[in-house]
Image (cartoon, rainbow, N blue to C red; front, side):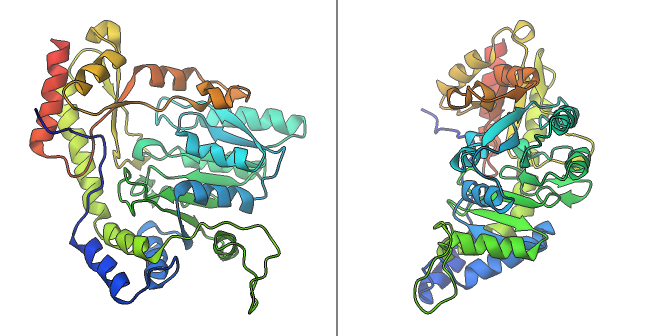
Length: 375
């Protein structure tokens, strides 16, 4: 029996272990400490963000971001539909209503034209959303310039969910650094990981200061414990920040490894009938966090789900592209603008094993298995 080939596993090295040892040796175990401060500063240097707050998850960062731009109960928030549920859950936490926006074919991310039309219609009836949350999917930036221009035109804050796109660029600049607030995830399957963690960034220092305050139970400056606002226990621990600092040192290597995976897959599979890979938009450089493709079952001979099941029998883990949020039962009551593109990508899309620690033999096994299915 072959060992399992998993979708995207953590890839650790010596730097991380040394920094964790330092946290133990200095007894900085609590959710504050020098690793946290250094991680935030180093993250800003790598991404070009102005200021950063390290928190317990990407979801926590997005929850804070929505609160910081003033989202309240009853508000509408426009949101990408082709994404993981964690993008929309914090909208619900605050009692607000998501309005889902379909994808474009160029990047698989939010369609700027649909966003423009939706904002124009809302402006005409005096019901603009409180924020727009755009996702940078599978390591590729959305087309930010037109999205940001539209948001600025209507004075609607743009929040970038860059949970999946650390290391990606848009016109030479890091995704997540264009809007009012950007958020990132360091979950175990991401391109770098702290096991669990996230980062909130903004060029506005007051936003990040307020984020840290809210993430530390909104404790007022007083010798006793005093609280004038509701806060959250969202700060990243010093131990996990040490892991993050070590991972950040090899971010470039991790991006290169995942792009190499994609190149191997594309070289071996792109000529198969019915196979198309997620395109890399001309406006940026994707990380290929996950290598994604679509299958035309009429041309290939079997559909996406048949391929997934056949590979699973060989202990090769693959997953469908995200099920659009407007199709999720939990969000069934909410409006979606468009939806056909995201629905098609979900119906035909598959994510292949993409970890930066895959071996040449792992990749060969996946490729051979797909060829065997076709033939």
